Image 1 (cartoon, rainbow, N blue to C red):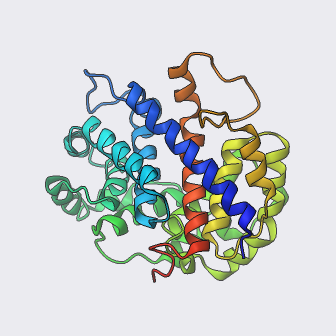
Image 2: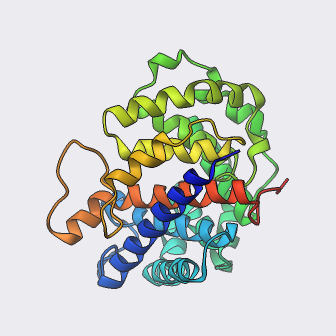
Length: 313
């Protein structure tokens, strides 16, 4: 059982990170340029953060373990993101122009969790799913899981995927030598777990051999990334801990992240470089770490407290 110190630390960390994200949006950070087009030149710095913040906010509302202030922050963040995406029209136009892209569907799924719908986009995605080229697109294994989960969340599954077969093709599914993990494969591991379990809502969907492997090695991996000050990846590993069932990492990770979190809620991405003094640049650099902290806090609290999705089959 997760101890009360962990839960208290997780709640404070996540609430402060959510407040920082919300305040940053209220200041005007994180929005798309007025002249943005569907041919986004740099999605990682413009388009992707909107989806990430929507993910965090949608999970806050899905799990239902937060207070009214944080719930309202989550709703504001979703409304901000949806308006930036032109009420979903940007996603529709991007998907229409670029048939093989999957990011419109993946971003859309986060809004669907919170009740947003765009019927033309859904009709388009359903139609494209009939094309051989869509299913033949060469995609790395954990990305295939992301697409499958987005279809599951939105209800746009053409047919139920073979989750076990998809899982087996991933790096984690091969039960590789645990000492071979590096920064890139660390993120592969975390995202494999995220998508298989739909961010902790379906822990039973993680195949038992993978669960046993992760439980054995997660504390070791977390210790490594904490030692080198990779706070973003450490936070992702804490999400994994909440997604696999009974947590195995204890207090260390939560205490380390709480120690580096700033008073305003910002959590540095890593120790490699100082946080920029300019607030908008600081938001761009460290938004993702705050998002992951909110997700880690939310899923950890929900699994421990029996949140809305804790027993979802």
